[in-house]
Length: 111
Length: 353
Ligand SMILES: Cc1cc2nc3c(=O)[nH]c(=O)nc-3n(C[C@H](O)[C@H](O)[C@H](O)COP(=O)(O)OP(=O)(O)OC[C@H]3O[C@@H](n4cnc5c(N)ncnc54)[C@H](O)[C@@H]3O)c2cc1C
Ligand code: FES
Image 1 (tube, each protein chain N blue to C red):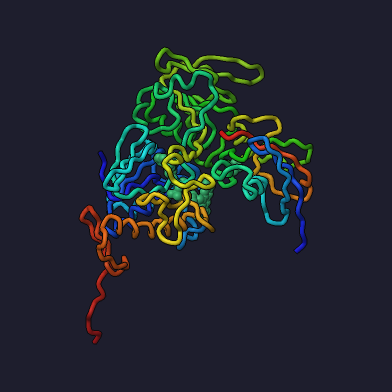
Image 2: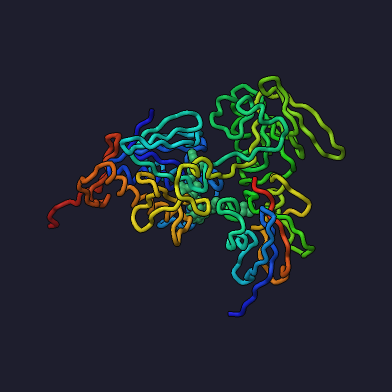
């Protein structure tokens, strides 16, 4: 199989920066990539399994990548979440694609 | 003091199925859960969503799965301590345990099964500066007993299913229901959203959007809330009420169990998966999402399997040396603790002429 990994930079909740490779062909989203590298303790991220229902995967987008537009449910969840900023997104709603190579994000605090 | 054979911490699917498997071995169960209702993640996070990987159910709603599990275990008369969090555990000289909740309820059992999932569901509290002063004095983060709202004025905040569903329910109980949400759009099951629309049109729900509660009023009990509404211009006003119920979801926290001397890895309890899912403390088991071992999968069907094996080990602890042989439910039927009996109909023996 052809390798199609991209590079991501993820700042965890303790402020530590991680450079990771993420596959683009495994139907993974950003929340799942973070879990697969265990960059946030189990049980503190992905609580709703990725249904835009918990905001435990909230992150701040730091690079100026063009990301897929927010759907209604993501927008609705973010409107109820805490610590929301202009650049907040739900990691579980962002599917990893080749265009995201070099994306830099920071995890929002646990709530 | 509540006495039982197996004390189960967590009334999610794993804990509920334990009741059934224990019952087959004539062991009685009591469950503690921080949530006011049984079902764990299935009832708190996704009751109206389908699950596709429960064996023999091509599709079942998580809420219906909870109902079925309760029905399956009913004849074994489980006890429940709901809306309380298990806080401390003390091992007695005879090897039994006393578990005490945050409300001081004590439970005594020879075997403790922790089926705590991702942890005890704790409310996500909105950042209102003086909210902590009013907790249990008119501010409630979960609705445990709807009756306390009878003929009262209630303000609910939130935009999800629970805010919608409780607003609907309380219109028949409370004197006045106000629903406040940061946006005009709500996020929930279609029928709930439509029902709130209907009740709003009938004047039974006072809907304030897009708005936010920013302060709470009252001497030693809630008498009102301060609301900030942003339409064209920002305005602040007060609403008189007896209760303020912010429903911003619950997030699970392992909490006090982390300090019970159990071996913890990745926010989960390490168990012996080669044998019986016992923890490093004999007599304390961990089953379902809360445990970890090489190859662990956090799935409902895995919790069912773990519960079944755990009950066998519990039987040995409670009835040391006593003989036991596995019986099929089809063959032996089920004798409930309530005197009921279920059994397969006998085959007829009859000549065909
Ligand atoms: C959106 C979503 C979809 C899912 N879909 C599937 C699926 O399709 N198939 C599948 O198999 N699984 C699915 N799961 C996972 C499944 O729900 C869990 O595996 C299952 O709920 C675990 O059951 P449990 O009984 O072990 O724990 P839980 O359901 O987490 O229940 C644990 C209970 O213990 C309570 N508790 C914990 N600590 C304490 C304490 N100290 N005191 C009092 N109470 C306490 C908690 O309040 C909670 O109610 C899904 C999960 C989510 C969130
Ligand atoms: S994992 Fe729950 S909102 Fe993303």
